[in-house]
Image (cartoon, rainbow, N blue to C red; front, side):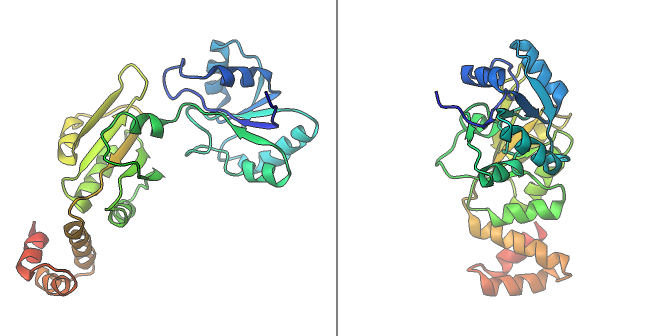
Length: 267
């Protein structure tokens, strides 16, 4: 099997047994493992009797570690990059060092393995293959609404924290109405839960709280024009226009009657 200088190695997102034989072999044979949190990675290594040295590599020290890793590679050492869970560079560190390694002519390879996005998408109903992944969704309501308004014709997939997800869903509901969503938490763990329903029912389902890492998909809107009008109504209301003025303005831009738009304004 061909040897590489730098290996990108996925690690389990929950169930510790969700790791490939090749990943275990690579982690045993490289000289260094770059990881987000050495304590988290050490638990995995101990489980599989791996004694390779770990060194921290996270979003706060990515750039300062680049020269160190390049010097180690120049001395002939092999390095593996892991994240706390899942696949590096998918909302995890790696985006800084990989371009530098390629620029310096080191060989880089990525192993297939655990990833929350593909795990989640494999177990929810979808009509097509296309989706838009936005990573961790922004925190502000305005940013959330912009993403949802800009992607009404696409399935939108995002990560979020249990502390923020309900507020995120309420912001989406305000922008997109009672749209259908799928929400997954604790994927591959004992209390895994995936629910597909209208967003109002999902909010109600988790009204007493939610735990675990979250991945969510907002389904593409069937009636895109109405959703666009609702988004424009929000913008014009924020600028101080009255419902009457909004109905006149938007009825001239869309194939919608003034009374219908006025009713959307007061809905």
